[in-house]
Image 1 (cartoon, helix red, strand yellow):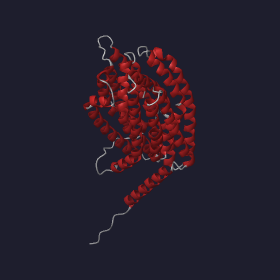
Image 2 (tube, rainbow, N blue to C red):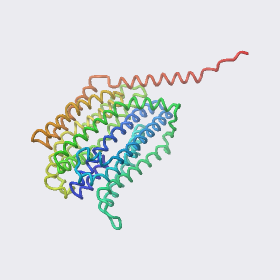
Image 3 (cartoon, helix red, strand yellow):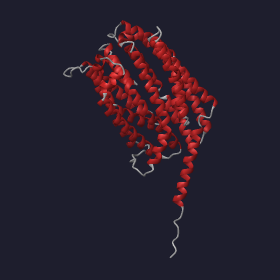
Image 4 (cartoon, rainbow, N blue to C red):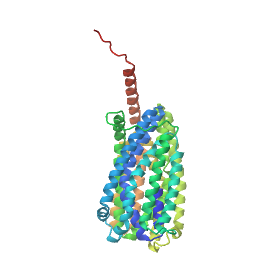
Length: 448
């Protein structure tokens, strides 16, 4: 999210067309990113429970399987997106001018998908091992690298020519690749005892992969459907003109800066709740869940105020996008700032608390209800068939978040969201005991 926001702000110096090109590219690629990043959520849940039981070999298996799976999927997606970049952009309604501006950035960003999701999985493992500072520092340095490279490559500096929108793509590719490499090196060379285990056929990693896919499946479907919804929102806004699309992308890219500040709460919930469930301490798991929820509400209120306040800085941040774009952006930020408590709490509950309890199927149902039953129909109806246009689409996005957070909160308060995790932990312990008994069983005697 932080990388996308930086790219948007830098290319904003080139004008509204450049902002629209980068924003549309990110909206398309986000579908794949959200799908594969769900592997990180599942790996984080499993690592937290295994770490709670002090099973470092299992932690290593989960990390290795998660990284292998995400890396392969990322490479496959990069090949497809690069090969069919222009038809994809044309299919979403981009005109010939926008396609020309967006193609190079979209291709470079697509190649960046593999290191992005590898970083997401590796970061999730770090957080579940009670080492959140490592990915935080490395990611912060990567964002700084992306910022410097972005300004240099987009605008040019000294002998380095201006690459325009493509420069933002190169900056993202270089910084994301460096981030991925450093994270992996630190994970397997650190003191946590994690080691690389080749996920070969017939090994124990096969069982680990099956459990990871079983847990990740509903999360992956939920995330890709949400990613598709952001894509549909972008298509609806594209129908209203490049200026409207540019305004919406500025609103969302600035929102992402503040969402990043609260994004660590959901992985933190996975870590602290998952570890207690792995230890068999349900009361402590519940207490940790309430703690993260309270922190989420408090942080969301503060971030909402800060996000709303940044609307007054728009003329300085985006001096070349035009007055009409700035006006729409100002009111879009105000609308989305009001929804921050619902959005952050929805993330904490859905991606953190309920996920740590293995209640992934309900997460899928809650997202479907908010996005496809309410949000998208309202956006299409209000945006395209009334006079509300831009404002109707953003009102629909707020309504979507309110429905989702209501579903997740009711689930947390009224039902045993942790039941799946308790059953899985019981099965894992029983399997471990059977394996131990088989290893300790004396060999059968041979009579001649």
